[in-house]
Length: 165
Image (cartoon, rainbow, N blue to C red):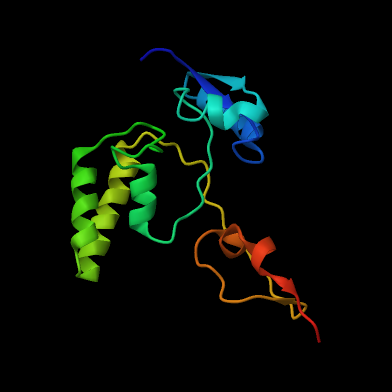
């Protein structure tokens, strides 16, 4: 292609800093001859009117407790949340096979191939992988901490309490 022009729909409702990130994408893409038109969308209607409806938009994915869960929700051909509408027969074949594989090394190799397929052929642009840091204090108490998502499975406010001495 000699010249490519695409719209990128964003709002900070997608994630904090999404509009600024879109500006960085626009500037970087311009160096490659790609014209990214940043379309600032309404914050209050973003998830209803933009995500899964506009061809290219910002989004945010927390991790999931298992690779299968993440791959199924975000990349499986029949997933209602497959935001890039990507369909790869080999990926979907591996996804089903990996669920039934009891040999951990074989299953890990399948997930590694699936990850490579999303990298090489998928429709998502991954801007960043966030690391979350948690702290501990004797002034707070809680039960067992959930392994999925940050802040105790996003339920810290519900499940933690002020500890008494």
